[in-house]
Length: 154
Ligand SMILES: Cc1cc2nc3c(=O)[nH]c(=O)nc-3n(C[C@H](O)[C@H](O)[C@H](O)COP(=O)(O)O)c2cc1C
Image: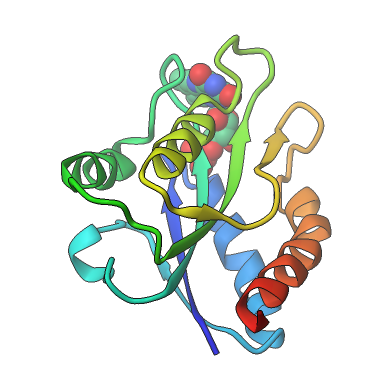
């Protein structure tokens, strides 16, 4: 059974709660998982099949949170396709910014360019609608797990 690496990018800590809220559902579905609060590409193999679930808020004017920037820089230095990586994206943002969930969009585009395979649709949670973003994410995660299970089984 696949191991899911839950990679967190957060400035104020809210997205860390999202990661912690979804982990039990992932484990109940039979997947092992680890939460990485300081994602580091060196601790993730690019050569073997693996699944990343990225939980990422947006800060500044469409920027990545500081704790996530080194990971993005590491990815940008990889000069190869990473087609063994499957990933899901949960973006947390605020629609009062023009750059709503821009970090989540940008990491999605980067991974797509690198030939990683996205599982399910990118989720964008607006904290204007969901002041506790876990509420929305917990509704969405079962369908993502279903999508992943189908891919892993095939
Ligand atoms: C200074 C600041 C800048 C922000 N910039 C954006 C932005 O450009 N786009 C967006 O969608 N949300 C933006 N947000 C909203 C945050 O993404 C949102 O509050 C999120 O819940 C923060 O998650 P975190 O607690 O994990 O950092 C910003 C929030 C702050 C405080």
